[in-house]
Length: 151
Image 1 (cartoon, rainbow, N blue to C red):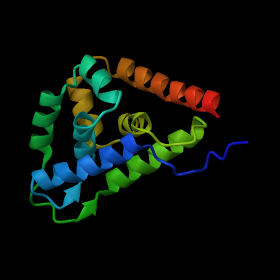
Image 2: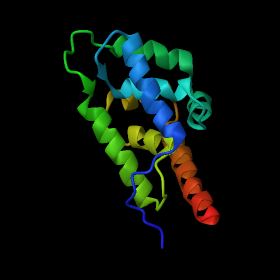
Image 3: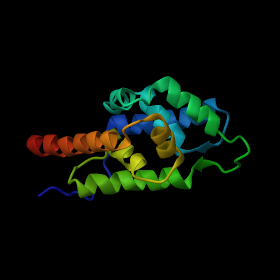
């Protein structure tokens, strides 16, 4: 029987985290917030960016919203409480869906289901938020099915 309480992450998930840190540095801030996570989907290879773009949250419009939300006066360092919450939620979703790893799809679903700046950005850009949420949720379910058939 598979152990679903693992914190194993995919390379794509780890790349999004790394790119979020790089985005924060690019904006000259010492904190990594959820908006940088959202932007990082466009900096890496993953299936989420095409879905986000198809629903109206393309790279350029997301980047504009990120710039509007950067707060150079915020003096905390490292990952914000919201990023930690979203990351924890992504792991919880992987466990809930009985997936043996945490992938970008879990991270995006966690963003969409958590009150945070990234969710607010997506909700302002996307006309059919519920449709986007349902499609990402379906992608998460397919990850689990794929992982189980390979096990």
